[in-house]
Image (cartoon, rainbow, N blue to C red; front, side, top):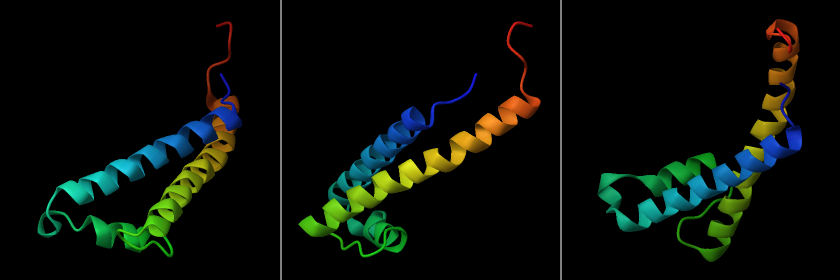
Amino acid sequence: MLLNIKVVSWSSGIFFGISYILCVLYGLLVPQRMHGMSAFLEAVLPAFKWLTFGGFILGLVESFLYGVYAGIVFVPVYNFISKKFGATEGK
């Protein structure tokens, strides 16, 4: 079975976006000395600034786009390998 690039890209983009929101919530709920979430997000997301509205929105958009990128790259690779080495249907 081949994967649909649109479905996988949107799904992974939304997954990355939700994961980003959960990371920010974790960073707000747990004391800074116990996690370092702000430093991690600032290192991974270009131009992200912790605890600013603009930084939050930018981080959400960047996270979504990272997920879409992962889907766009993953699906053709998966489909190629599936065609080349996967089991054929009907067997």
